[in-house]
Length: 368
Ligand SMILES: *Cc1c(COP(=O)(O)O)cnc(C)c1O
Image (cartoon, rainbow, N blue to C red):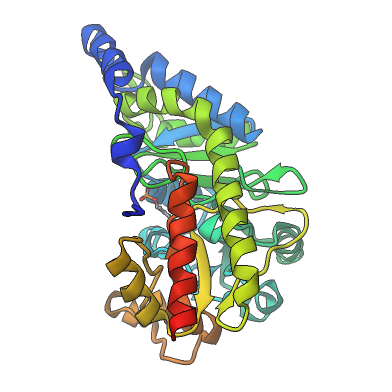
């Protein structure tokens, strides 16, 4: 049996409805901005429960633009965690600011107890990452931000529909950033991203900034960039957005199936902390395990496409060396790099595939 990590072939087995949309788009010639994009943005804002959503080129751009438009730039420090995809830090660097790392906790999100000791006179913002689809502790982060006058931009790229006590990822900070990359929980046929915010002013600035600062065809009000969400991608998004809640529920139920099965293997497997009141949406289903590399090879050989996110923590990557970190600086993140394994948990898996993955993990530890 093969238990695939990517679901794209299954998800797009029937592409005719999408192609029909695209035929209409081509006939209209409405390739940039236009009604489809506006409608998708409105549907996205309604889904998240926020005033505005502004479609941009990628999730990375959504983060960088939100930070920049909220006043973050060169000379500033931005607190985030090294336990994330490189894009979080790349976006901070794009603004000219310096990323300042805080280690993650047992739930794989920023350890809020360590944030305040990293605040300096230069600190301007915090970028919590809802890594794997778990939520960073937003009530605690907002309290720290308020106390020190910091801006919060949530990296919600892995966490669409995640929530704390019903309040969704992306709605806690001054802005939230989402990605529509093909392997994100809500995806399109290429790159795409959105900035969400309650602020009319920030939304207006973002709409101008992504489109050269043009208020109308002939009126420039500020410098900007060319970084709009493609209208074609918005059309794909309009079709898939209707499934977001079903997709989310399916991932949560797959994760529960794994959690239950692995609770009896506690000698070998640590399931990351699940907090009460937090809706974890399992963009990635990650465990900490013993003899990780052997388990990974064993599962891959059995056809279970397990992965590692991420074997080399990003503060130890060559491209991040300019910030002067060394092994031992962020012990939880580093331990995670040595022990974490990601199992397929997406919405296109069949129950028997998940059960095969579970049986394979059991077989590995029982035989060894
Ligand atoms: C995917 C991702 C991003 C960036 O999204 P892109 O659309 O690929 O630019 C940023 N942060 C995290 C945590 C992500 O997983």
